[in-house]
Amino acid sequence: MCRQIAVQEAVIFSRLISLCAFLFLVSFCVHASPLADEVHHYREVTGDSIKEVTWQLHRGDALVLTYSSPTERHTTTTNQDYHTIRWEAVEKEVQTHVVAMRNGDVITIDGRFNGETVHKTLKIDGTPWFQATSLSLRELVATSDSQREFWTIRFDTLTAHKLMAAKKGIKTIESDGLKKQIQRIRLRPAGLLAPFWQSDYWFMLPDNVFYRFEGPSGPPGSPMTVVTLADR
Image 1 (spheres, rainbow, N blue to C red):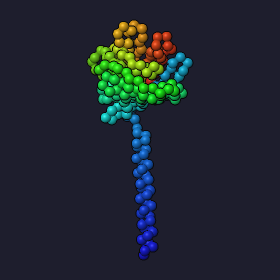
Image 2 (cartoon, rainbow, N blue to C red):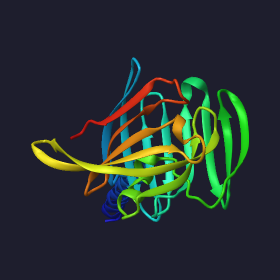
Image 3 (spheres, rainbow, N blue to C red):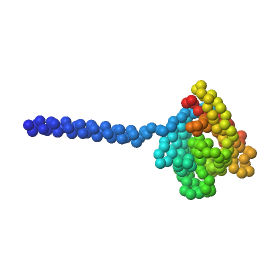
Image 4 (cartoon, rainbow, N blue to C red):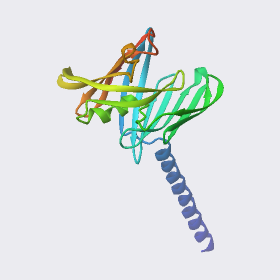
């Protein structure tokens, strides 16, 4: 009888261990690989360079967008109004890994930039910070407003710049045999530099999905970059 009880206890204990291991594995998978609420794929062309890009948005108390290519990863956290709170950028080939956070009218940047330790403090004003314009410009698209000013940080210099986004009309296109409307938005520097640089975004209505980008890859004279939605 004692031997039978001991065997039964051993079997029960073994099953409990297996159950715990299973629950741990499920918990780990859920936390390590959460499903994105929205996923899109893009093709980014700059000169002769072609990159396949994945755009993944996670919704919660905050919005977290991960924009990743074979060479870079940008993770941008915004509030529900699409105003940037935190931005993390990684480019291993040039030994860059920086984190930028906003506190009031100051953005601090820490990490490594082109292989060197960096700590910067950027003073701005109360205007919103839109680091991931492919997401944050949805705020303008969804309203009846015609334009919006915002701050953004250039990844190649880690400097802050104020831009003006203005709606430039809606046109109808055909996608997958269906007619779709897309909103065009033009970006220019705010102020006196407006005539010297511009780029264009398109967003597909009514879900406001980023559809296309055309603009210089840097300051005037830089190669043009074209980003197109590849999953529709």
